[in-house]
Length: 244
Ligand SMILES: [Zn+2]
Image (cartoon, rainbow, N blue to C red):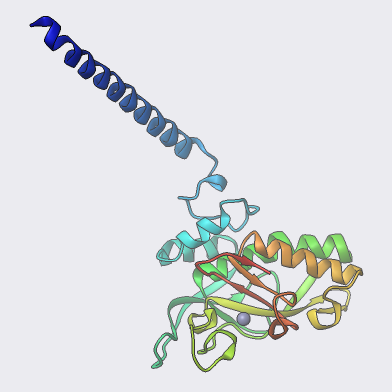
């Protein structure tokens, strides 16, 4: 009898042994992950909201996407940075257009020549880019400060590339901004049209702010993407990542 049962018993013991080690492994991994999430600095924790005052990290685009359904949290993130922003919405009768809950930027460190309306995650990304990319790049390449950003708008009820059919543009939800140039404190004006792609200080500044935007906005399109973007950068909080 024993001889007949023992192989089966050995098999069950072996299975139990493997199962036990597996449970141990899963428990260990969960504990390690939990420990990491609790003790990680917030800057590297994708589950905590971003702080505009802190330099972007590899998890910044994830944090920005996480703000999408968190209007209250996102509004406090923007206000904590010192920017003045009021809650606003854009209603539209056209399908796929309008912004249900967004912000109007009244004042930041740089002028936009008037209030701009954006979704809160896009506003957060823009303020991060201003502070951690634009101003340091202006100091490094131009020895001056950016006082004004020239833009071509945020909200527009239209499709991608202005085509009659197809997908709605990020602008239709005020989730994107088109930027065409920068005014400096020393009076210079930098535009994509005149300075993009040049081996000059101005050209290097534009390359730096484009590259820096890619570490914050999921979607960044510029003059190298296509001729429609010859005179501006398109920054968007999109689902897919593009840096062109
Ligand atoms: Zn655009």
